[in-house]
Image (tube, rainbow, N blue to C red; front, side, top):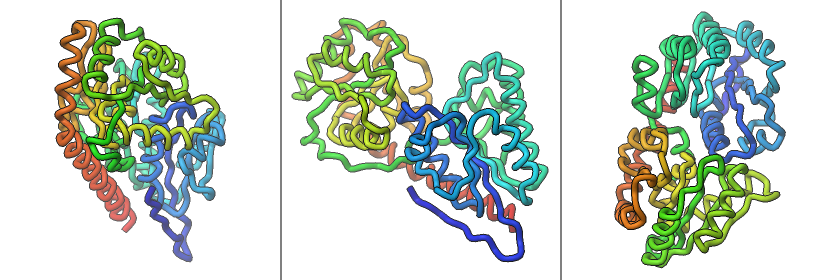
Length: 367
């Protein structure tokens, strides 16, 4: 991660950046996008204030939070967070966390607080940054409050067109997970694995799915391996490894930092990564594997986020596809290696450009 530091000038109060970094320690994807959010916030002010919710110390280490950051924990610290924004030196920076934003009923009060934070920062001539986000389950008043707050923000980005439409317009940008770094991985003809990672909370993909994946692996000479990127999926990974005749890489007692490194090494050796987890597919693509969402009745989240980077038709609904049809789809996707590499590199460049722009916006506000 790039670190861009600042130094307080004598005779003035230190500038201050606020960043929200909540998330479960057992989810590598959440850590991935929070770490990228932290990278955008780091170095934009003399002081960094991070709200991490109920996260444990391991979460802070996983994100690489600077040791001199002011860390606020639990909902009991929200009043202090708001007070620090209210009393911050002029032109503070507020960076919301990236990822999925639930706007279903019951989130109105939370969105009202976020709107208040946004107004406080803008009144103090500061800068509000909303990294690429996706809206889930929109309902009013939550959606209306969220849209108002987004319009008041100098940088408001959406990872899919549907979310931008719900918010009443805005700028599309790649999911911030694509900022995790493109890796060369193994040469294509040396890649010998087909990696699978599915959500444990969804139904088993079924016999036709198992037959198709096993047949594809056999015809391509690939070894099947199931991996765990979210702790709650470990039982499903074991179940699928047994059904597919492959191996499982459990998470077990491994610390999260080591687990992430192990996963990225696995993706480096894969030709194909099958998952219904967005950031399994993002990390797989960054390692040069071809990403595919092949599950029964997939949501639109993954397809829409990958559409934003120009990588279309990576999703197939296996509830309506027989084993032969699914195997044919998977086989054809393997021919998209060059396209995947091109789109992923372009996404990384686009996010680098966004970061440069937001830093320039902050510098201009403080000039």
